[in-house]
Length: 240
Image (cartoon, rainbow, N blue to C red):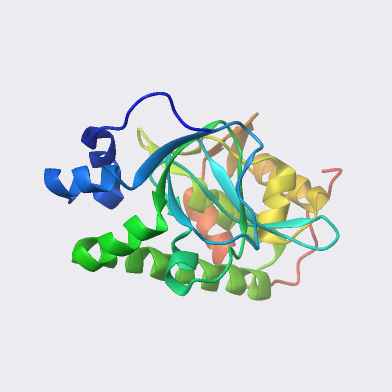
């Protein structure tokens, strides 16, 4: 859905992807960018579609997921403001490898394939930013593979919460914690097991859960648990 107002260079300047651009370059970007609004629960992209644009989130949150033939999904990541997606398909000209669905009402910039290609040719800083982002995603994928192979569900939950937490006035808080079903899809576990782990972390005083907000009360212990390899311990007792 197209926005009703015109974009201006200042909006683009607030996006890290374009923060180093000159006014002349930003004006050029404006000719290739469109503003889009998406309601909660809508698909911005679907796996298998033709790759025709890069998307930059201005506000809201989205999840990147891969659906299977039975209708289940694996959540690869959750993204928020100023993060972008779709660049991989623009670089290798292959169809979309994953779907992107909004977790809440979101605003995004759509950068056309032609505009993206031209800017990469003319802007080394932008090319390096894209490369760094791809490297970061590769490292994230490596950590996820390591987590699935070597770390138990307890550790995976702890690691995910630490990665999502932000420092708010000296306190580590997950402001918009995903529902337990989504956490389960992100770490490759069952919802029931995630619920048991969250309850156990709360009981031990490592976290405090308040609806969709989670406070990390003992980050050091959480980090230690998140880095531990599979241990011969019994899962948390759901009746404790």
